[in-house]
Image 1 (cartoon, rainbow, N blue to C red):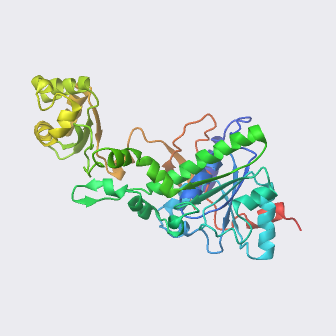
Image 2 (image 1 turned 135 degrees about the vertical axis):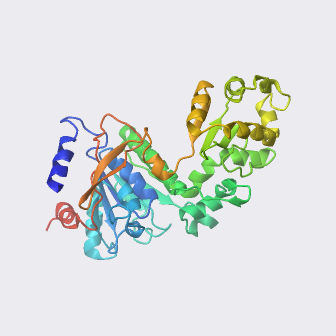
Length: 392
């Protein structure tokens, strides 16, 4: 079976001459957990060679769970296609290997605690003095300066500190966004920054330093609530599966107990919904519901009318009627149901002795291979990398 899987992988490789955009670039990364590994994983998917420097005990994300055939889902997701080398840069021999890697690198990424690399002379400014074409990327929780810079910055903590949790959940309680959204955002922002720096280097011939933080990314997403809080009438309140400033835009239960979210974005859609789905065309001119602002003000009455209609219909008929009304909708699905979604794309990946179908990258590109290279075993490439970059 393993041999057959490898043959299948080989048959899916890109055609000769189909180069990925970052082929030939070397990325060296001192990373752990999620944000920085996600950024460098995206670079690896674009063809960069990514050498991951790990501690002797390994990236602690390796131990988060055992869901992926005995390996951690987080690690498998964000470290595919990389090389793993264990180094302790406090030891002279290992430091020599790291120095040789950095001398050949195009990009250096790190997400250690702020200041951790300064004492070792591995901070971004020092490295770029030594290697002017090097692009450095520092990923932190709250930036490298200021009173908050020393705070530990795990994802849920940043969700809370940034106000994201404060506007997420039900009126009764705050809620966590169900994935590590601040880590993910920081990783994607780092990818954008690195690609921008590479484009700049093409023009100037010089590298530069960029930095991203989990908090900065979350704060950026909070711009609309921020403006409402600072300059408007106050930040939106927690609404569960309701939109705070558009109505109707929320979840309603069908007769067979399935929740469906509908979204009305303009008056034309509202008229169609009233006539075709509710069967009450006059509601479109009702003085309580004649504009979005009025509908928000009378949300409870509006929701009661819509909920009554949904409760009369089983899911298949409700969806047919919504389609007839040209109303946007989405079912509230479980993760297991999402795994069967007709829009879901997956690529195969070899994890241990099994082939797993993992979610395909979100960017579709001409250089797509249709399969994932495996995530490395701890220090899998230690000997070969040492021999290549610091030969005896």
